[in-house]
Length: 165
Image 1 (cartoon, rainbow, N blue to C red):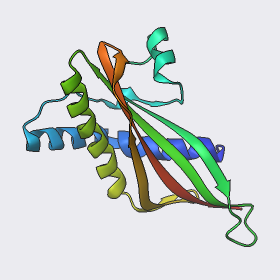
Image 2 (spheres, one colour; image 1 turned 135 degrees about the horizontal axis):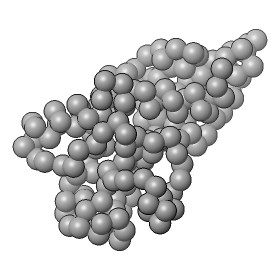
Image 3 (cartoon, one colour; image 1 turned 90 degrees about the vertical axis):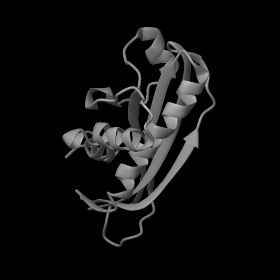
Image 4 (cartoon, rainbow, N blue to C red; image 1 turned 120 degrees about the horizontal axis):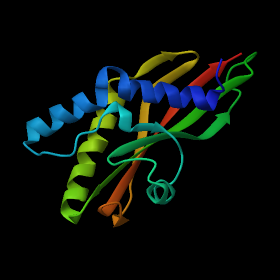
């Protein structure tokens, strides 16, 4: 069995990549709004907490992208006779670049909506002792120079319940 922090990240990544869920969701949203944004494939969903500045300088990861990582685990000991019962916090950081500031700011909202729509449909038991109550938080970062002109990102943090012996 994988470590809890890795297993939680893999669960979220599977939600976004299975059957190209994030790409399909993005296609639906942009078609309804008649607003084109750069495509996002499952190959652009990474299990990494590397900051954008580092990956940009190394040219390791392309845009748009979703980087998924675990940033916190809390063992609340909520259940007797369980060695771990509490919360695991998983961040899906969406990042986009463009040479026009307006395009970056507009497109980011579609990517955030795609990820959160998938999360909203995934409330419940995720197996292996993980469950999702539906609670998440979105923190949008200000645009900054980088990438192919400007880069903007948003962190979508979801709290997963965990119960393991």
